[in-house]
Length: 292
Length: 291
Image (cartoon, rainbow over all chains, first blue to last red; front, top):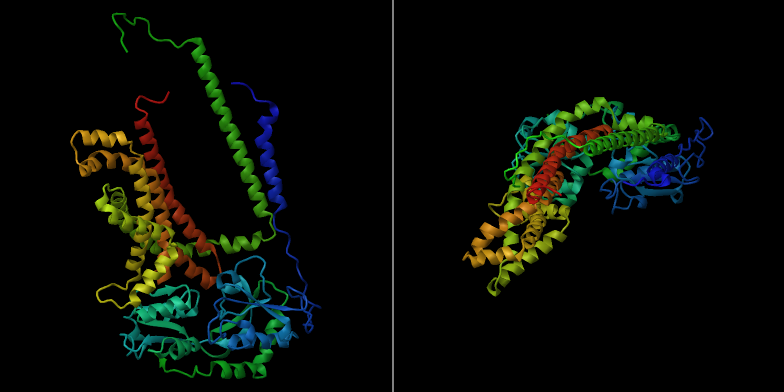
């Protein structure tokens, strides 16, 4: 055993310290805290956005009809695309000043810096979620509906009790899933899908008897995508107006824009714009019988 | 060792030199334990300080280390774990059988077996290259679309089948490596004793081959254990997906962490077992001990 020269013996310690120094060096920078643009005022077109002068809006990909159209949120077609542009206009950003980014549902609520100013992705507002993100006021009152193939054993269901014994499906992260477990309470464990396409495939294949989705999506599925399916009915909502379940725009927790965006949504509701857009893009979603 | 007629009257006393050597070794061992401990402590401290002093730590702690959500998630995650464990046990058994069968087919000798060898090789190549998730999608959503009578549409069974298809290819390669690592002289000796090809495979080659590849097989089993969760694309709720359901409802990531811990806890005994098997085999191969 020869003793190594001192330098070699100290090498690992030096290496450790260097690594520590590097780690500390690459610790994240303090996020730039933007004070509310002209505190209290929502200066038109000059808010503290991610990129000065433009409003960045996030949504998932694929963006489903009837909320978006042709998977192109930037074309202004589809209810949510239209709402996003209407909100932007209220805030003083015209069409050319709005840029879209892809923000998967799962990433939209992760802590850390967001790459959008607000996100529009059929996200329902609830108290638990408010601890992680900010929401604008609701821009759409959600009602859940049940879709089944015309020849499935769920097709004749007239009430919630008739749905207890069938295999139900819903999409993860949606309130449709909550509706299944809280309102229908089926005997079999519901199937839960990562996205809408997988859920529709399972419905077509008969791997589930019925699918629970929001009403506009239900009518879109039966009208355009799975034509041998029908809407059995809608589930009794929790209420109307503020008490109803609502979709809201998602903003970073403590974002400087939350107040202004919420004001814009309220104004759009007050002047009838939201109702008009709903009429234009979701008019198929006429009411369906309520399953009690 | 022969003692002859010499009697060992004196009891054994270790020499001074030996005692010194042992004392020196003990000192070395103590020192290395101390150094290792200190270096680990320093590393842990640095990591801890970096994490805790980062600007986003407060929010990260609320989002990833929230006891309330951990309590909420644990029963759901454990319920989902049944799916993982069932798949792991059932598929694991089938995979070993199919993998071994494929490996044996690929090592058949003689020109008459060419088509068998070709088919087995084509199968292995195809499933080695096919991404797991695509295999699962084809099985779970493609097969039921064919509307074959008598074929199940249960996503759990179809997903399990997809796992068996893919993993059999991996495992067959492991077995084949084992078979080829048995020295040709073993086979030659077996044949010269009058054993047929089948008998020499059964009694001489395969026992040695299988023993040699136990560690990589167990690695594959651990990997399978984690891949069972992919079956959730068919709507089956496994441990990870159960966590995802809660996370996407509440926007809190703690359930994922709970699922991760559950899987790690499950994997640790398996990897220890692998180590134990490997060590035992090494000891056996070094009959008479290491020099």
